Image 1 (cartoon, rainbow, N blue to C red):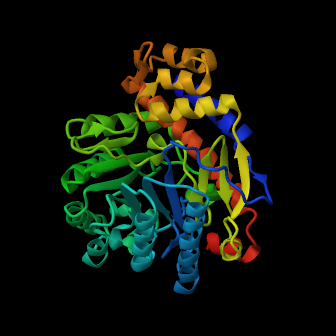
Image 2: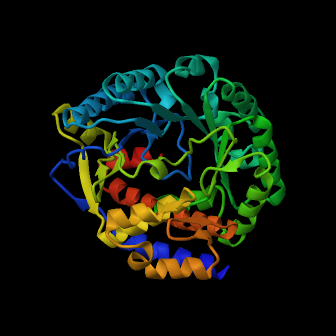
Length: 425
């Protein structure tokens, strides 16, 4: 598909050009803007086992590492309150946030007691979908997202997840239990694994329907340079040539049972929350080692080092190790991509915020999408997507997140040797 190849190359080059961390010794973020909606992202970088394809900041779990970390995560949260920030949404990602369930509950309780929190989301793994975890989370959160990736036991073994988190059959049974307990329940899946056949994909889709989950998110396989070798050694080399065909199978199979929440998120018809907080919240500070926030016109990157993180927060400083400033054109592209990924771009608000129309600000991007047949609606008020347009947004987001993973690699390269070895053990 020519449009996919052109778009892949364009987004790859753009992210390579502007997603470069500028180191900083000034641990500062902008003051909150009155009337601005903010979400808070909190990162928990611990997993019982590390997956070979994951580019997020994560370390092998040890209680002696995690306990002081959770204490400092709470301190950092209150530092943002002292700066005047308020939040209506909290998203806790990882790593595995549920690795110490009582510590996680303390984080949620502290946020709810100090901010105007309306919704809480957190991530977990299939082996934590048990009563001793779910009972503590009920009433505390609105949305739980579990990383399954596939129900196929062969793929799970290839991903080194079968022994860690259980079989596909066990995951399905646990999802059916937990989905009945939590208001919004999301299952994260990955498609286009090298060893994934059409038959395996269709079987995964049948199990998603059978699971009674209220939401499913199907990510295309994507890898940063740092994990490309381990990915190739475990699951094989990625073939993007069949990605579109697999995506179309996913859409055709799930559409009778779900509605689109984003280009790769599928919601039951009574559900509106989606897995990508960046669609609903353009502005969000991040706390925790490896957290990446977006405020004003800049990304702010927290140190990936647990030692440096604990030292900074313990001394009363924000743990920022670098930032990336977005120029106006990059901010327009970011808005264009994120809103269309969420299936709707508000042209009027775009003009208010950037003092130009979408066509004036992004003429080449608009021309490319029109020629490609991406827009279902293209009037003075809004843009919406055709099925082809949805796939083009999957391509954009895939390449954007590969770029973000490369950014994480830059931050990880600054780790002390001992912590660098831990991150890849």
